[in-house]
Length: 162
Image (cartoon, rainbow, N blue to C red; front, top):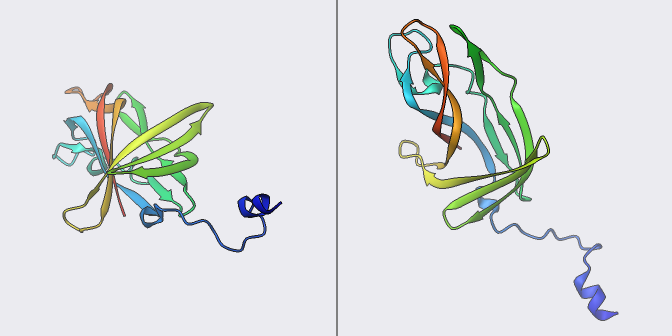
């Protein structure tokens, strides 16, 4: 009887602390680096950072909660011909954990388990925490000489800052 009461904590008022709670925060997308430069906004300047070329990616964020759960909103683009259009954001929820210099999120997305590993670093300009991940075989737009947009797949680096 004593062992049961020591292991059961249904009447406890204390929360079990999350050893990674210091990482809990809202991280907003700060970079979306594709393998090829493009001038998608027709300002005369090409960039590999698609945040500088389109507003479609700018609403992406990750909210890491102190209880080890997370909410993520990931916005992206689509298009054909010479039109790039913003897609509705994909929402996902799951759990997160930290091990050494890596933060891992795990969620079920449309019936598939999705694990994403982020490197934990520092934004050199702000001194605040930064999360960076590499997405393999990610679609990214390439602007052709004709003005049409063609979609390629490659490794895309995505950064999130506090």
